[in-house]
Image 1: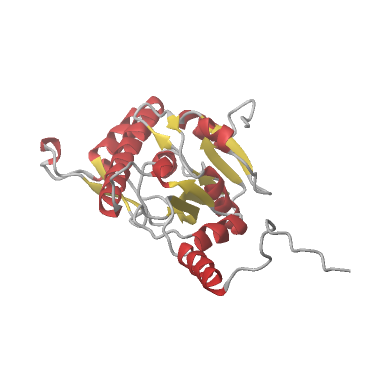
Image 2: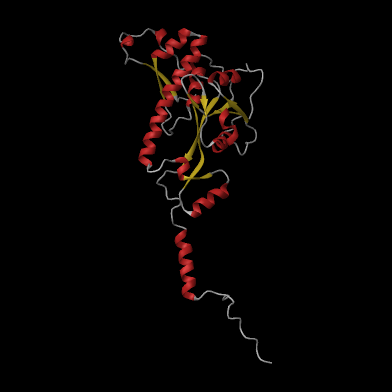
Amino acid sequence: MAPRPRDSVSAPRYLKRPTLFLVVAIVVIAQFIPLPYVIMQPGPAFDLLAHNIGFALDTTTATQAAPASPADLLPNRTVPGTLYALTVYVSSPDAHITAPIVIANWIDGHAAVLPRDFIYPKNENTATITAKSTKQMATSESVAKSAAIKYINKLDPTLAAQLRKNKVTFALKETGGPSAGLGFALALVAKVENPQLINSRKIAVTGTIDESGTVGAIGGIDQKLISASAKGATIALIPADNCADLTALPAHVQIVPIHSLSEAVDFLAGRLSKVPHC
């Protein structure tokens, strides 16, 4: 019996050696090609009450040209408890993000892999992003002070006037952006008006703020809550607008959505009849 003729149209079961070398080379080289993604990871949490805020008489205005009386100076009060400002690490727009890095962060589960254009405007580099972030941080500090003054003025106009006269210095130099605004304002209220506000608790907070005290959404909410949980926070105050962005809730952390500075203070002081939730 004659052998069955070979099917002339069937594909070969192996690659010829030159072709195999070419495929392997392409696969290897592809691992080092930068991809248009950024990595967002949980960042450190900074205690806003532990020597991170100070007061100094502001002598830059004409009204403070004369020596101030002790009544014009605000004491840097000790506030029992911890108020964590939450942060995230975001890879720079110039970072060399390759396929292995993307895969490793997907597997990790704590990081988010996002399209670069979703985070950074086109044609902006690390230097311009850093400068913008630093400026946003400075603006956030100034606006937080204004929001705190406006809130305290309703309770104690004299105390608000003292805060207005004093220069407030924030020691958070390791981070940038506007998302610590609510934390700054809460820390000022606690140090100046209500030292028992935190009540020896571990509280995490994130959110932008404007001069009226309105709280705005931030990025990286999942990663920030991972940081809150790692620090042992039992309460996390987040912008109400971020509720829709939550994909996982950390155990043992009460998530409290906040619309304003006054709502945040009322919640911490136990004055809300109904605790907000996402």
